[in-house]
Each structure stands twice: as structure tokens, then as C-alpha cells.
Image (cartoon, rainbow over all chains, first blue to last red):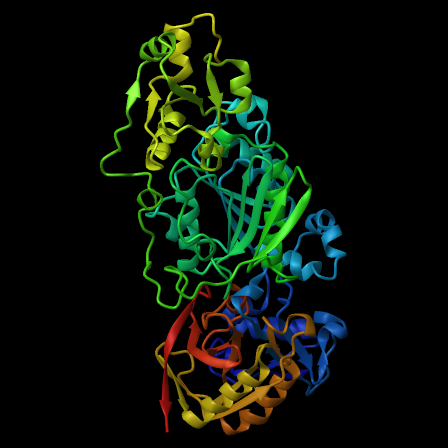
Length: 473
Length: 148
């Protein structure tokens, strides 16, 4: 039977420029075979490796789709016209969201049941990428929940090894992984939780030199760092690259949560234009933290991250949430965008990452001279009953375990409020465990007009050289 | 390698895509079918722009488009006797770059122009035209020559 095969312009280049090709055939399959015999290149365009018509190729006999008839076996009669019509479709890059496998549909079934997530949302999660800064207290629940939720690509930046003292809260790591790189145990744990997720690890210190390029590879940044220089760096790099920052921070029993640098939202600098004086806000390593607290805050960061990816709900941009575990309360503060903000304001002065160590006062050109005395000099002063005060700036539990006789406890973190309790007419001698915290306290007190000196070597030196009966950990 | 189009026809495609926002707009680029259709450097001359409804299902029209194949077949059949044909397609990327997506590439055909219009918040902000490479692995950008 004589059949006319009509080709759209897009395919004619592969068929000798002809708009139609006449063949002899009894079925659609035969007609196509005859066409491919003459025009080899068309075959690769129209048939898949399995020899079947590609899903985006339509074949019509007159107006009828052969898929609705007998496919390639559809019979033809003399004079029929077979039309080959390519599907013309596409879409923006966001649409390139990958399909879900059967296994994924089962795994994420509770998400698929939610109208706000559904298959479309789950595919967005699969296509999304999140960079977690830190694989510690906040990074642990954050990365675990993001992996469980099916975020397709998770980046982790950390350069620490697992320490025994991390295990009280950093649930990505376990006892056998003590001493190994955090990224190793994190990757192992996350891959075991959800093998569909790609884990990318960066064993390095995030810096002004590498942050911008790294952030560009991800959709959302989640800051779980524990220090001010990195926090300002993450903020600035987020603003500069247009990435939202799902932010969390913790201290003792309190947590903070927000989304910074979202479109038209305020950034961390709008809230805190300047870092606190160096050393005044103790880190978790110095001040302690309730182990469950990062579980609460890191999980909240994961929720905000998922909302940002899915485009649902009301992101926490422009609001700062304060959590108090002892009161079991949440407070919400409004954060307004500062039009004069040096990085996200109308006339920004910061156009590239700066030196954050210097910005946070941690890199002074000439370190201040801290007056010191030895433990022997302290002992002599105590024996002579000189008029002076001895302040211990360690934490309560350290003080309870071992103390120098005659000392008064004011933990470093409370010094800002409690320095008014100290007699400023006499010499103030300050000590801690090894002399580091007390050096900061001395610097602070001297700034407030006290005549303060540091005890070199702290109570460790005291226990070693003055009172060996004292047991200090 | 270029896309030759008049300002009036360009305006027609832009209007269709801006009206479709936040969904993707799409349509056909029609012109004479040259004898050297497969020549890699040839210009694609457009003398008619025909906006079409986005045929993708309602759930994803904001980031997908589809052209009804029956409509395409009808148009081609009507044009063929005069030596004319559908020489390219246009579609918009709402709030996304005017670069082809992997999905665009997966469904691209050779020798025709793919003109992508970026529409931000309902206004055209960029437009670029592309042709699929011979091996089907990438898109090559072509110049857009506006006349008139």
C-alpha cells in the first residue's frame, strides 16, 4: 500500500530536506522501517535503544494517535498519511526537577500525602542543595533531617575531629568515631540514613577566600557555626551571592533562630551591626550547653530550610525567635532591614568578604599587655594577708570541684553584669583554670578602670606548684 | 548562525510571554523552509509568530510548556505546499535565566531555533536564541537579528 509519511520542518533536515516521503507499507511499523531504511539518522532520533518510539515522538494516522490504536502494528490502507510529530516541550531550569523512583515514592509517602509538599514538592527537594556550615551540635539534627527529608545534595563544611565531649549533643557522631574526622562519621551516618542523597564534604575552614565560590554551588545555606567571625562571613557571603541563610545559634539553655538574607529580608548585620567585644561571650566549650538544645534549634533550621526550598508557609525572614529551655518559652522579635546596613543596605560598602578575625577584634596588631603574677606571688600575698580580691572566673562546677582558698566566683560570662560587685579600691587578682579566660577578664576589667592582674597558669599551676593536694581536672 | 526576526514579531512573542506570566508562554516561529535546512551556519528567518496555549497540565505550567502536537501537525500541513514551515519555537522562563534547561535539551530537535524569553515579574528581562548541537549534547547560542 502506498503511504505518505509527512515530516515536520524540525525533522526534514534528517530526511533529505523532504516534507514527505512515499513508502510501501501495511502497518505503521513497516512504514517507519521503510523510512529509516532510507534515512538512517531519523531512526536514532525517533526510536529509543529498546526499538520503541520515544515517548516524545507522536505518530498519527490522519488525526489518530497510533498509541490509542495498535501502536506500530496499526494497519494502514492505501493512500493513508502517517504524520510524525515531535513533542515540543521544555521549561525553565527549576522544572528540571528529577522524577521520583518507586523506592523514593515509598520512602517519602508521608510527604506525598501533604498537599503542600506532594510529588511536585518532593521533586523540588530532590533537586535542591543545602550547604551546612558545621557538622556539630546544630549541624547534626539539621543534616540528619535534611537527608531524611530527601534534599538531593547536602554539603558539609567542618575541619574538626570527633571529641568525646561532642557526643553529649552531636548526634551525627558516635563513640567508635571519637578521634576520626567529623565529616567521615557524618557522611557515613547520612548515607546510611538515605542513600538517595548526595553528601559532599569540605574538610576546611570556611574563609573569605573560599566562601563565595562554595556558596554558589548550593541553593540554601544553613549556618550552625559557634563563632562570630564565621557567622559574619556566612552572612556577608549569603548577601553577596543572594542565598538565604537558615540561621541558628545556641548558648547554655537558650537558642536563636532566624532566616537572614532572604529576598528583601534583613541580614545578620541588620540585627547585630557589630560583634560583641572579643572573649566576652563565651563559646559552648567555655560556657557549656544543654545537649538537647541544639536538637531543638537545629531541627527548626531544618524546617525553615525545607520551607525555603518548597516555597510554602511563612519563612522566618524578618523575625528572630528566642528559645528559653528553662522557661520552655519562645519569644519572637521583629527584625527590620537596615537601609544603612554595610552589606545589604542601599549603599553597601562591603562588596566582597572582609577579614573577619580583625572585624571581630580577634587579631590585634599589638596584643595588649596583661599584667601577671605567678602562683608563688599569689601565695605570698595570701600569706601576708594583703588587701586584695581574688576572683575565679571559671564555671560553677569547676569552682565546686576545686578552688583556691579565699577566691570569689564570678564566671566569665557573668562578668559584664557583675563587675559592679567587685571592690575597685583594691588590687583585683583574677584566675581561671590555665590563665586564658582570666586574661580576657583582666583585659575587660582594666578597660572598666580596675587595677587587675592575671594569675599565670591558673589553678593548674597552683595545684602543681603550691598545693599538690588539690585535684584539678 | 542567527535568528532573523522583525521588531513587530518580537513584540508579539514578548506580549504572549508577559501575558502568560507566571506561567510559561510558548508558540511557533514560522518562515520559509530553506533548501539548506541542515547547514549549521544558516540563518533562521521568521516572518510569522504564532503564540499558542501552553499545553502542559495545570500543575506545572509555571516551569513547563508543551505545544499540542496535533496543532503543530495541522500548521505544518497547511504551510508545506507553499514551501513554508515551523522553523523554530519560542517559550518563556518565568523568573529564570534564558538558558536552556536540561529538560529543554532532552526534548530538543536539530536545525530549528529555540528562542527563550526570560520574564521577571511579568516583564521581559532577557532573550536568547539557541540551536541544538549536532550530537544533541548541548545548545549553541545564536545571534538574534532584529529588523524593522
